[in-house]
Length: 133
Length: 234
Image 1 (cartoon, rainbow over the protein chains, first blue to last red):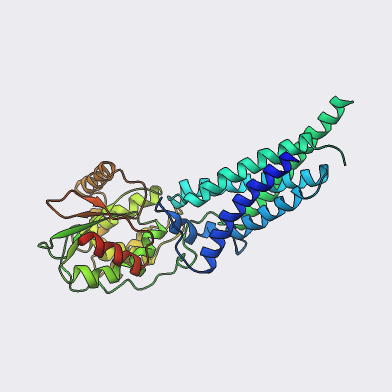
Image 2 (tube, rainbow over the protein chains, first blue to last red):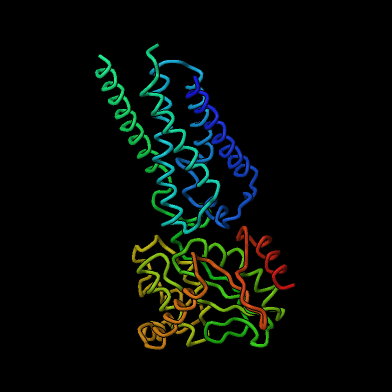
């Protein structure tokens, strides 16, 4: 129960970041940014995947992880792990894009990278320790 | 039995990693497709360069009146899509509000950020500086900007950009390999190192006797940039 709670809390934090970036995207606002690169990253083609803002994909992913914490059992734990590990892989790619292609860093993206890594570690731990339903 | 359960769980984790990798690869394929261009500006279609530079004095890499009390140093890479975006959308406003009015002059510093094609582009741009057409050619090259390091800066593109910039294209091609151009490239790179350049475009305000300061801008659109420049000049 404690592990599922920890995952849920981390997913809410990540979801809050994704929600903020989603609102900024659709409201055509500049994100609050101390790194100076958020606008560049937000306006780059990497900010969308298949026409969908990556912030929206992140929000959906965190909601998915959150839902898995409401259900006991290995299948739910496995679903959370797949979602969060996908998030880690895609976030890693976006971090590379920021450093190597866009030449700008978005602090919100880096914050998300940290949160999704934590969520993934917790989800993997859950898969390994979840009692059989 | 417990060992068997643990092994099964590890297999599940491995399967999760595999599934995540597959989904991530699909997402990567449908995302940026290797382009860092702003969605609204990526193009390989030639467009007419801005005419906002008409009538403004140029000397080498400097645009504007020599007596202007402040200099805005502009670090750019001709392959950088955000430099292109700034040139197309914001430079005309900066020129009309700050350069034409004598408040500032602009100094171009071309640096290699993206790769080999940047070197060729910068050589053409600095060669145009010998004709006092540097800013025009930089602007014209942005109108032809292609995919990064795709070999898009061909002689034909340089000649076409030179035509758009009303510069002598053959002279530019001849001067690209000159020692003077090489020296200017090295000097710009040296200045970039001294200014601890992190990327392009980067802007530095020089207003002697004050120390040069980076211009902090949260966005490259005309309104945000003009506000930041106005504040920096006060």
